[in-house]
Length: 180
Image (cartoon, rainbow, N blue to C red; front, top):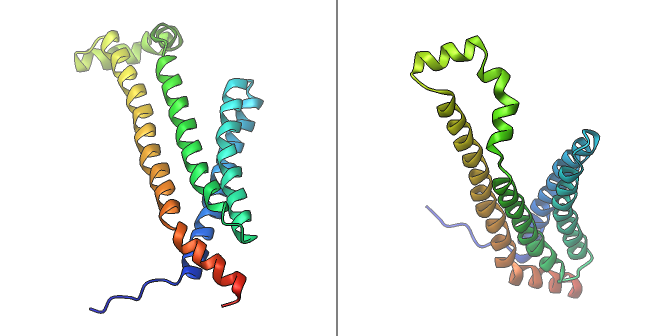
């Protein structure tokens, strides 16, 4: 099996810009939409979090625009956008984990927990209401832990991907300036 030749710097730049444009647009669209929905529901803190996270998409798209304008510092915006997004999501996860209120969950779910159907299901399984509430707490913490781990790997990986292409991007931009 023959090994494919390494990609030319211009192709690396093209592929990186395509990925960054898609990623930045996706972050902006998803976080922006969630911010709007949160604001419409009166969750202004959630809307603020959505806007903060959407900012990462704006930063990434700004980096794309700079690179398209042959400005090498655009790569800093791409790397920085991923680190910013990583920090924003991790801060949100930590906040949500610290904000868990077991008593609020109990009060909110009390009608469901006390329903005849739920009581029968708990009895069938030999579980108590406390077991159910502990399970819900575990699910809550596990879900946020999963978000943190996935964000760490994805955003960390994207930052590393962009960073490792600095030399190829610089070479591609020099080639474009010199018309080679």
